[in-house]
Length: 139
Image (cartoon, rainbow, N blue to C red):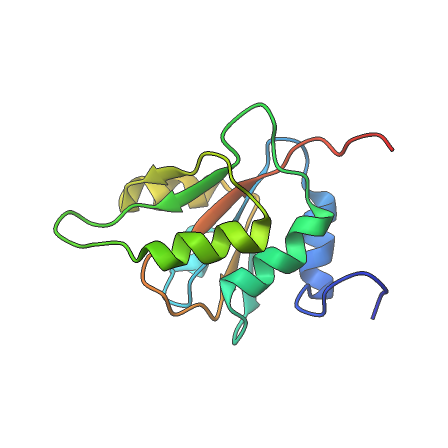
């Protein structure tokens, strides 16, 4: 264990976050997401809610200031989103900015290009989110 790093951030996830560069994206998916189908660099975080992962990641991860840094999956036509999912993700990230919504299959295509996918234990429908990494500010 390291001081100041959430125990939900595994050593593999910490390494992945450190390897990512400006503009790289990471998908934090729900438990139903076919991560291994779309991305060879897929990590597992079974049993851990996506909001807990986001809260563990965000102190270590600067969001991109030059593009919309947060993307979530849109509902399939005829279906609805639970606004509580976005609310708990915003709270976990401490983020009040714009969240882009992306159609399901477009989201899958973007996941293929992401640096990594983390399949969480999140059971909420449409509980998938992409974070775009920014530049760490100079202290």
